[in-house]
Image 1 (cartoon, rainbow, N blue to C red):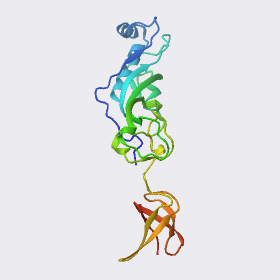
Image 2: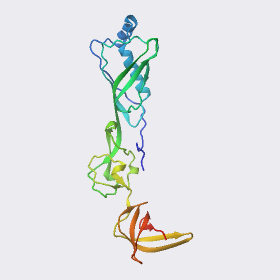
Image 3: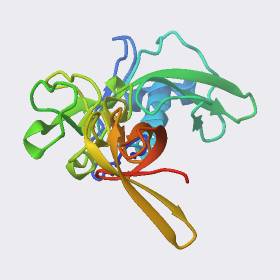
Image 4: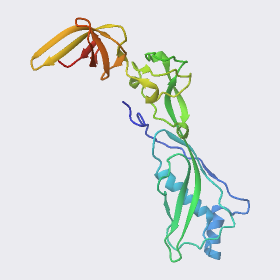
Length: 249
């Protein structure tokens, strides 16, 4: 019914706000580069820079990245100055938002590897309930609104296109502002318990129809119990349309 992401927004013109949390003892980027050349230690500012650029290049996923915080690197850290370009990478299993770790590898003559903690905040416009909705309500446009949410807080699939929601029915009561997800919704009920309906069975080119009574609710594709009003027999059939249930001969 809906992909895990429903419909993903591209992220053109992503704004990345880089917060370099450095101790006061750490020199500026230019000073650090000079220090690395003179004392043989790797510039921490250069590590931050390569992580920042790497995240800019790999900015993927739904919504827009609002903020990237590269967390504190101890200014007392002493890594041998790398004789080759630093190689950033993402360890396996890393999320695309929230707290993650970016690895930085030195492939130089004296190789080393460092893991830098990063906090990424990404927001997305998702569809939420415009008001409290009881169970069994068919969704209309006035029951839906969009709201900006942190992607890291979305534990379930979500929707971004109202057309995907219109006509669906609430499976349970939904709070105002709650994000719509497939777990909260069902296809509209085509059959209601107690209603009169048409039973039909097909064999080759022959179709037999009769009246029946639904003994339970059903959405399209459900197998439900129905009573044949001619024979009073209770049989099972598949819901194939409004007021129509297909049974076997």
